[in-house]
Length: 108
Image 1 (spheres, rainbow, N blue to C red):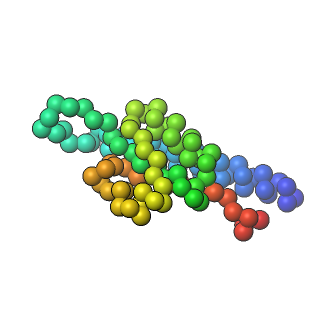
Image 2 (image 1 turned 135 degrees about the horizontal axis):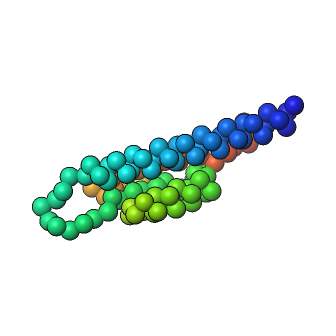
C-alpha cells in the first residue's frame, strides 16, 4: 500500500510540475505579446531570469531553461549571489521564474 501511495504521489507531483511549466510558458508568452513597443525599432526578446542556485531542483531547472529557450526568450541563470548583489531588477529582467525546490529528506 505504501508503494502505491508513493507512486501516486510522485505521479501527482509530476503532473503538477508539467501544469506549472505550461502556466509559466503561457504567462511569458502573454508578456511577450503585451510588451509595449519602444521608440527604437530594435527588437529585443523578453529577458527571463531563472533561479538556479541552492535549493533548486536541477532537473526541473533544466526543463524550464529548455522550455523558455524554445519560446525564443533571452534566458539568464540567477544565483543567490546575483540576488544579494542587487542584479535581480526589473531593469535587467522582464520575468523571474522560481521553480519548485529540490526534494528534501524531511518529507520521507
